[in-house]
Every structure is written in structure tokens, then in C-alpha cells.
Length: 178
Image 1 (cartoon, rainbow, N blue to C red):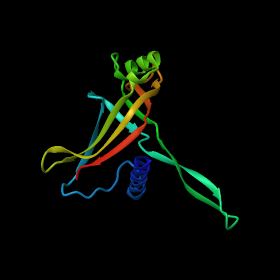
Image 2: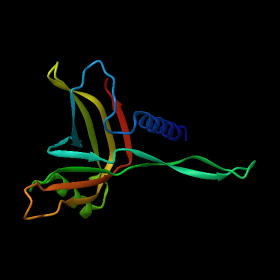
Image 3: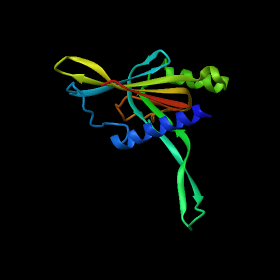
Image 4: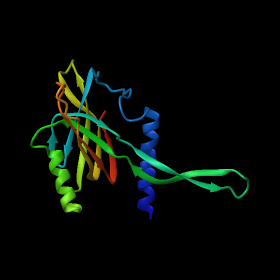
């Protein structure tokens, strides 16, 4: 019981820090290093997923529980269940796609062996030091694909084909390296 409460408190503190920072995305981060630009990398288990062009949906939601106040006609709000948002990963399509393989195996197996952890690392680049350094890492636990999609096929387009993988997860941990 105490462990569950502690996890919920840690998660609520994490949510509060997201609101203070203005949400996950580009935030003003004060470090000793001067960040000239940023990049990110994505690992699914120990597999580096290359050609990722975007990651969206990183966050959590806390449902609201409404209770009628005993002392007045007002409704009191309190935090309820914690829900981890679905993450969308987009990458340039390739014929031997890790996204497609994972989706097919998960659909066929319908079981735990296809739960994977995903690590998303935000990297800053310093021109002065000519290197990348970790700013933030989000680790998503027990993830599984819920949607795999390919961008529209168009004969009149010279744009790359993009595949999207939407994953659900059962946990989120944040690490900061400043």
C-alpha cells in the first residue's frame, strides 16, 4: 500500500514538474553548458531505432474524481487514476522495418513476450565542445504497439514514406542529467 502511494506521489510530482516546465517539448533548460541545438535518440530494448523523425504524445494524465462536499453544495475535485499517454514514433520507412515486425509479432502472439521498454533521450549539442550530451531521458515500461501506419502512397509526391507506430505503456520514469 505504501509503495503504491509513493509511486503516485512521485508521478504527481513529475506531472507538476511538466506543468512548471510548460510541458514536454522544447523547454528553457539552464545548464552550465551552452546548448546550440538538440537532437534525440530512441532505443527499443537495446535496439537503436534509426531514422526517427518525431516523437509525440510523451506525457501522463491524472483523472479527476468528483465528490459532493458534505458541508456545502460544491463539488470537490481530487486526483484519481494515473494514465500514461500513447506515444507516436515516426520514422522513414524501410523494407525491413522493426516497427512492422514488432507490430506483427505482437498481434500474432497477443502476449507478454512482446512488451518492450523504450528509452527516449533528449541530447543537447554544444558547438564549443563539439559534442552531444544528455539533457533528459524518459524510459517507458512494458510498451506494446497499438497502431502501425504507413503514410499515404502518392505517385505525384517526392517525399519519403513515413511509418508511424503508436505504443501504449504501463510506466514512465524521467532522468535528468544537468
